[in-house]
Amino acid sequence: MRTPCVSVVIPTYNYASYVGLAVKSVLHQGYPNMEIIVVDDGSTDRTYEVLRPYMNRIRYYYKDNGGTASALNLGITCATGKYICWLSADDVFLPGKVAKQVALMENDLALGFSYTSYIVIDGVGRKQYEEHSPFYKGQREMVKRLMEGCFINGSSVMMRKSALDRAGLFDERMATVHDYELWFRLLRFYPCGFLNEPLLGYRWHGKNGSLFVPKNFMEPAKKRARELFPEWL
Image (cartoon, rainbow, N blue to C red; front, top):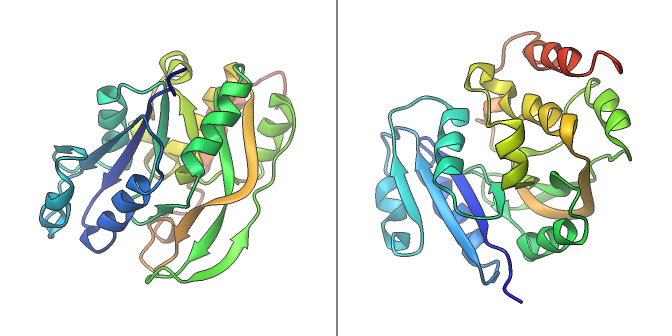
């Protein structure tokens, strides 16, 4: 039986120092049915030169700078896979991630998406510590716990394309909480799965986008959640 196709979308903006490592980490997965879609969100550094050696193994799209959500949406729109993964350009997949998550999703067809634990690495890729993400059974409990804060690392997520077709793509108006808000919309329709195994290297290099967020930046996503789940929240 043919393995389902997985589309890995890598949005990047001026991450020439890391994007090649992200691509290599996907190529080294060894999963037999996969496409890599790199969306360059208007980079002005050496991103294209870094990616040039991989051009025969990736699909590369360049667009004017519009933010991570817009880059992800372009990549998802171009994807042909049954499953969609998002990998930030400064992060890396650890060995076996794609195959293990496909097995999880194929084993439970009700799941709309899944996520994993991860390790934190520094700027040169050295392991700092493991982060074992929490997980709660049932959509209601997941929603209520997510209202306390987002514990799902976006680069660890695998989404069923059909679930995105139903719930919608990333809301480009949500700026820094586009991922947080989408998890609520997916949970409106689907349960999620979880692998308590570190399968992602989350790079903390001091210039992460999460460092540059306004006060109360999570409120738009929480407001959306309250609209989606008035019976629970």
